[in-house]
Amino acid sequence: WVFEGLLSQIDSVIPDKSLARRITPLAVTIFFVVLVNYWLSILPGLESIKYNGVPILRSLTADLNFTLALAVITVITVQVYAVKYLTTLGNLGRYFRNPFKDFVGAFEGILELIGEVSRGTALALRLFGNAFAGEVLLIVIAALTSYAASVTLPFFMAFELFIGFIQAYVFFILTLIFTALAVSHHGDSHSSDHSPADTAKKTAVQTE
Image 1 (cartoon, rainbow, N blue to C red):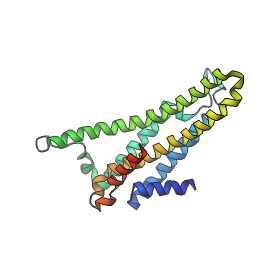
Image 2: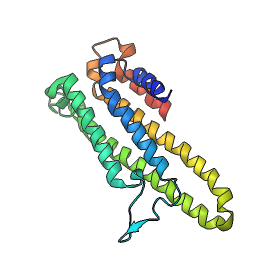
Image 3: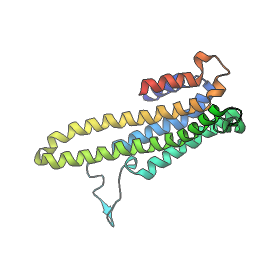
Image 4: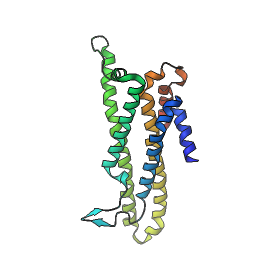
């Protein structure tokens, strides 16, 4: 059921069936990896076993190294598909333009280049921030409620399960949106009503 729902989302964001099927393995894998690792952070005693003061078992989503690596993989993959659909020169043309012939376009290209970096950074920091904050929240609630923690914590754990699903879905859908935007010039050659860029923008608004 979940897999079919994800495929439906992929097809709605990226109408190009060929591109949609190519990006499906990465997008779906990211969803489940983020979801499972986020939910692992809720397990009691996950970080209680330590070696030299370092937890042996911990949630990967609460590790900035992991979220940065996941964001780098996503950004690189998006660029690979952009080169495939627009060619190398076409993809570079999105960022670098002749300022003497098109000053506004050159400025937009610089902003687009900055945007590529900020998107990856935002992906990593958003996931890390939410996962880390979730772990801290559970610790604080357990400390504040003391003996009543067994009653109060389950409610907050259920809330964190929901947040984990939302974070996995957001990372998943943003991967699709960034891919659709990267090949938007390729999509413009088709009907404007069904181009990946138009669909991605609509989905981005709905996600926000």
